[in-house]
Image 1 (cartoon, helix red, strand yellow):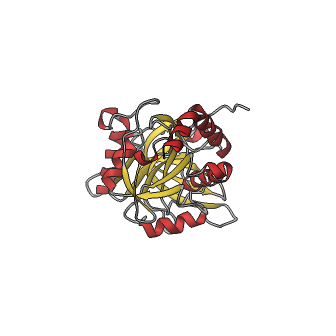
Image 2 (cartoon, helix red, strand yellow):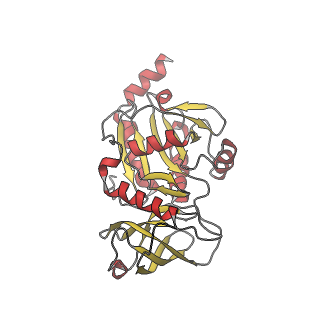
Image 3 (cartoon, helix red, strand yellow):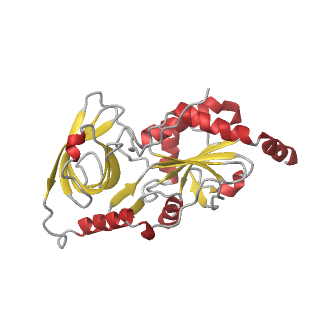
Length: 301
């Protein structure tokens, strides 16, 4: 049964075990507004005892909250988090006084400039184009290159182990966990999953081992990768992602990437609004696209 993919800019998550809804006062600078999808991309200050300073898109339930909001406006708001979702409410704009005493705010406006001026970002690859090879380090301290999986379908996404929101990294990793179960005996032989950290300073191979254990990831077919900040940043920008680990701010969007057996970009899914079943259907279609190529590769080994 064919499914329709609705790809929407979404959010990022790593949920805690709390059962009750939590509300956190927060403040930040608006970087981007997506009214059709009711999201604001915000450079958010750190929320004590919950979240580090970071940039991400937040869902807005009431479109009235978007009135009088524009890129560059400083706002305060409430972040509402439950077991599997998050959104912001009670958004209030206020006049920003001065950038001089606050270098972090200056860094945020640099992010704003990067988002609004496409010329400041690297050229992104398009569907059907070759994905540039990259080499990173996995959770077992082994070097892993995209090119070593030639002849197999590769899906990879980006995450970090300390991501606090329940509908971001947690959801993306959960999708991969369900993909691992769905494709069972094809994992490793036909299909490879890669989860690449945004936060190499903290996500050491040891931390990635612990994170992989949460998902019962088979290290032979689902690798968790880290590397230099510059290598990860370069890869993210090549795929059209917002990612600037600058001034203590974790700035990133969400992309799940599918590379076909020939190393070409088959899909670049933005956000997190697709289901694990939809992602599985997409992977199935790419796996079935060139089955003979896989058979030839297996016979030649």
